[in-house]
Length: 294
Image (tube, rainbow, N blue to C red; front, side, top):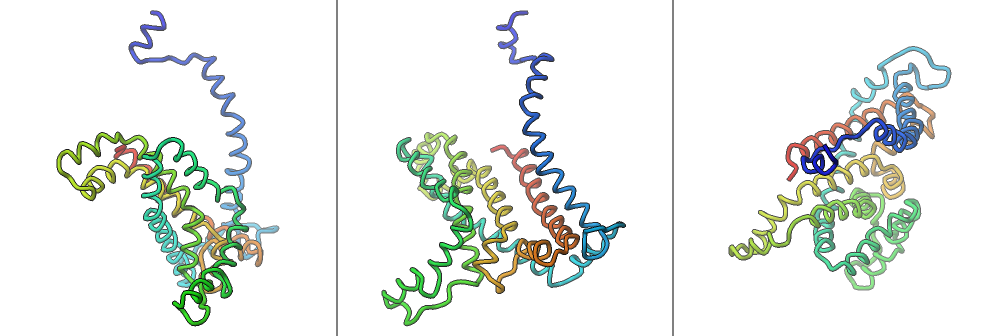
């Protein structure tokens, strides 16, 4: 049997040399992930079961830190607030990112290229620089307050920082490119003739959007929502600087427990809970996407 007959049947057999080549190509990445991702996560998980409030010279196994987190209403409320902020940020990114992603997917290659540059450019900046930029913009003497006072909408500067809306807006600005790229990649594979066929059947733009575009774009929408949600709930720089002490998210508490208070076991336990929640949500979405490939 020659190679053409094998290709005609749609079956390509990979010999031992091909498998060895595949292993050789993926081995460096696997080693890097093992050393710098899997091992730290397992070490942090191990520290969450230590007794007491210090991981140095600790011994024994205990669930006290998980019980403390799950039985304390303060930490549970912070957990719920964190999930709420993540959901609000993801929905805001969807409202802003879907039209942008759709427009880029339907734009001419020249305009699409420049649009991608504008969308991706903020990701090249340091997150700290972006957050400090927002501190300047939203401050009492910042650009927003100056414009509002100049236009007469307010009499004196108001406090725009250290509240929940400010945190959600800044998080949405940081993670909006991920939503745009997710939507654009899916919409780009939707045949434009389907929209034309819907118009020929006398469907208006809203009906076409609701019954054609959205169902076919659902995998990209869910992927973008999941990605933005996971990134938002694990953020700690933005809530800490933009929200201050008025807005508490789990990432900030984990940072305080591990870096400030040096309470590694309790911080590790909170990290494990947050990791479990985000991983569960991601697995549910991936399972749904596999069963509904669009």
